[in-house]
Image (cartoon, rainbow, N blue to C red; front, side, top):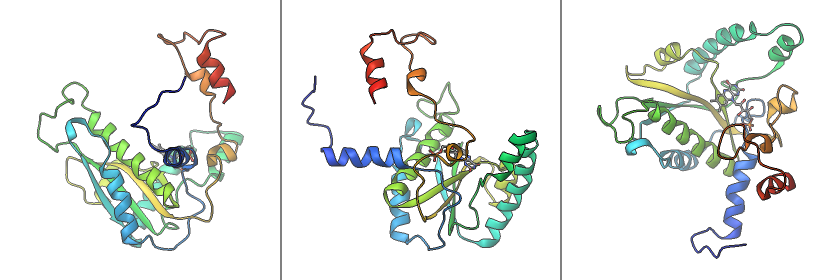
Length: 235
Ligand SMILES: Cc1cc2c(cc1C)N(C[C@H](O)[C@H](O)[C@H](O)COP(=O)(O)O)c1[nH]c(=O)[nH]c(=O)c1N2
């Protein structure tokens, strides 16, 4: 049954949104050096700034980092942390881990650190009384908005989290309450892969959606004959 929903976007606009969601990729190997024009960067930042936030806190700031010197300092942190991470694996898995490219800090023309000011709006933020991490969740939504808008603009984004946050905060000279939530590499790309790079390299594959959908209680699978399960299977 289809509902005549006047509030829905026209078909083509809907397709554009879903396309950005499906074709967004984490990019680290395909960056081109061409700079991102300021007008486009502003559009991406506007998209990020329109994310939902707890109590309309808008806890984010955006540090645009084009200095090679600063980026080199961040890369040094990455190298140390990546070495530590590699030690978590043994044998073939260790070799596979070391062969992965997990950052594009210098190859991309611009890095962007999206931070979360944990004290913005004062001590009482509507909706954050019980779950204090909601400021961090809000900032993640800003990252995702930017990531999707960038895909629509043909710009790749790669999130680098193999970093010591305290060292990163020091390099970026962040004030006390400001947490470096996402360190991102941005730039035009030679191509967007049609699947996650980790999947293409055999590290880990996308899980099946059917197995992740439960009804009413955890572990209660959808019953055979359930319309929802047949729709999920027919995708
Ligand atoms: C919070 C967070 C942190 C990281 C990532 C993502 C997110 C959400 N990802 C990217 C991650 O590997 C990627 O999203 C998945 O592999 C799925 O691929 P697509 O994003 O769909 O291309 C990522 N990738 C990488 O090469 N180095 C990294 O340090 C990180 N860190």
